Every structure is written in C-alpha cells, then in structure tokens.
Amino acid sequence: MVRQRKQRNDELELATGQPGAKAGDCQHQHRVYRIGLAEHVPPAFALECGVCQVHQRAQRDHPVQRQAERGRDRDAPAPPPKSRHLTRDEYRALREGAKKTPHLYLFVLLAYRTGGRASAILELPWDRIDFARGQIRLGLGERRAKGRATVPMTEDTAEILKEAKRAALTDYVIEYGGKRVGSIKKAFGRAAARAGVPWATPHVLRHSAAVHMAESGVPMAEIAQYLGHSSEGVTFRTYARFSPTYLKRAAAALE
Image 1 (cartoon, rainbow, N blue to C red):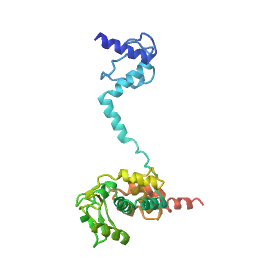
Image 2 (cartoon, one colour; image 1 turned 180 degrees about the horizontal axis):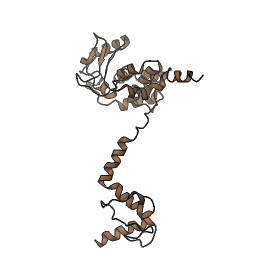
Image 3 (tube, helix red, strand yellow; image 1 turned 60 degrees about the vertical axis):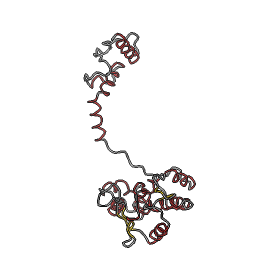
Image 4 (cartoon, rainbow, N blue to C red; image 1 turned 135 degrees about the horizontal axis):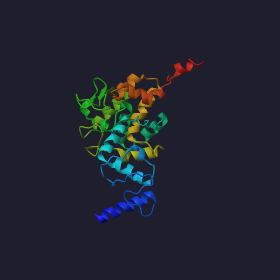
C-alpha cells in the first residue's frame, strides 16, 4: 500500500510539475483520484492543471468512458475515400508488364474489367464463368457478398479466358503451379514497380475501373450495379466528381 501511494504521488508530481505533490494537492482545489479508479471526473476539471490531466486520463481509460468514445466514433463522419487511381496509360503499362507472368496478367485483366475485389477474383472458379451468356458471376452462389456482382464480359475477355481454361490444372481461374493462388500482392507489387506505379495495390484496379467508367459518362446507377454496391449513394459520393457532366448544370445556371 505504501509503495502504491508513493508511486501515485510520483506520478502526480510529474503531472503537476510541483515537487512533493501528493494525493489531494491541487492549486485549483480539485480532489485528486487514484489513477484507474472508476470515479467520475466532472468535465469542468479537464485540462485546468497537470493534476486534472491525470483526472482526465483516468476518466478516459474507464470502461464506461471508452464505450462512450466508441459511440462518438460511430457518429463521426467517415474519412474521405482514397482518390488515387491508375490513368488508362498506367493501367495499360501495368497490364503489359504482367504478361511475363500468366496468372498475374489474367488477374490484372479480370480485376480491372470486372471491377471485382481481389478476393473475389482469386476465389473465382471456372463454373462461374458463363461463356454461353457472356457473364462472370463473382458472387458466391445465391448468397449476396460485398462487392460481388454478375458482370458481362467482352469478346476479347472471353477469348483470353477460353485460352486460359484450356491450360487449366485446377478448378480456379487464377492458378499457379497447379494450385489456386491465395495472394497476389508480391507478384503485383513487382509488376507495379516495373510499370512505374509502385504505390499501386490490387484494389486500385477496382477503383480505377470505376473512375474510368465515370469519366466515360456511365450513369452512377450502372456503376453501382457493376461494382456490386448496395447503395447508389456510396457510388455517387465516391465517383460522381469524375463524371464529365458533374455539376455542369449548376455551373451553367451561373452564366
């Protein structure tokens, strides 16, 4: 007990900058609580002196206070989305640089042309490639999955996939050495560095695809469906600013 009291007083001395400060000492006549106790510290005490900073820390660390802080975090506005994306030329350079590694080339092509998440592409089996209908089903059967839509494939994409299927050794589209590829990050990172975009990650392909669709004037509702967004509002907030028609009517009204 004596050792604990001494430790507490040492902490208070450091906090106040006053030699010999003890529990109960405060130039503002504030009561000093033991660090870690559950007593409530009134907000008026906050930051008024060094001792009160100790009070504030004890209150902050209390489980009830932590729960309240988490509640405030949920109410806070979400941080702005990362806006860095590949230009069309950068994407083409990345795709060309990946041709030496067949499974990486196929991944880059599909991740961009489907707008799918990296996990959806790596988990994609051949039985979800519908050549008859010209569709790629990124979703897991009937169960909805975040960001996994059914998208059409172009004739060029279909031909590349047919060639890859003829050489397939597994049930999965992205394979290497007779096994399904679990992670593409290392191979992708090397290709990105060679293409002059070392900052790019696999997810950037999905983001870049959406930006390029918006730049081409594709409606937000259609982009939302393509990306598998549950709400068109999410798509609008992130990609509307890339559309050539964004805010044009507002600007025209000011002429």
